[in-house]
Length: 310
View (cartoon, rainbow, N blue to C red):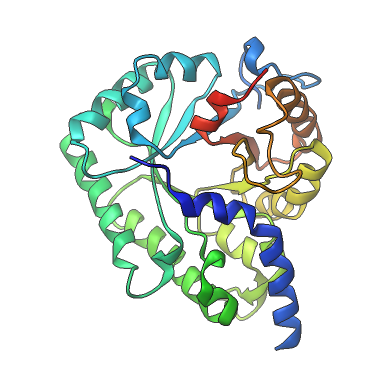
């Protein structure tokens, strides 16, 4: 299965989209010592293990013989695994069972920018239904621990034409996602979120106004912030508002960095190497560890992480 191409484009265009949208609206806890490949420095060890997660967009990766060993080596304890329903359930159940035995939680992952559009929204509900049905048929140690949504509609042409309308559809989609998952399951609901949504004001549902980032945070069990910057200061600055909002909302947050060649200067560690990335991660963690909502970090994505040089 080929990697989803729109994903890379969405990461690359985030900053450009933000400046355009603003103009438009104006007009109208660290785990046990890490291995040498990801040894963070300058960080006080937390009382509880920090979440270390990654995205697996290519399901075939779980069938490679040493995937679990490599995840363990990198101290990964959560995997967002893209669901391709062409694979049999047994393909996922074996991996989840073996991952859980190593202390790795597996969350089902899917999404596309156009899922917010009415003509494509059913795909999200089909995904939720598949995960629920899968969990109902397998053994407890083979079940997904959560369900994770990656929907980034700001890359759609419809957003450029009418961002307010698409923003409303995005909010409806996230609300529907939570409601459907929680209607008859205890699955953890999470989503990926860009780090510039604090610039947009929306109705909070209680007669007031709040930021779009706060609105999303308060509807999720956990959120992954896509802070795709290649230095600790920039990462901390980009997530400062969201972490403050998450502190107030009581929602755990992961801060994500990128190792994909996004084509955007300063947006990825793909050409920096493991040592530089580890150093910046350690510094970033020291800067944000005072936030009660901060629970760990995510590395996007697994395939690119593996290719990262020393």
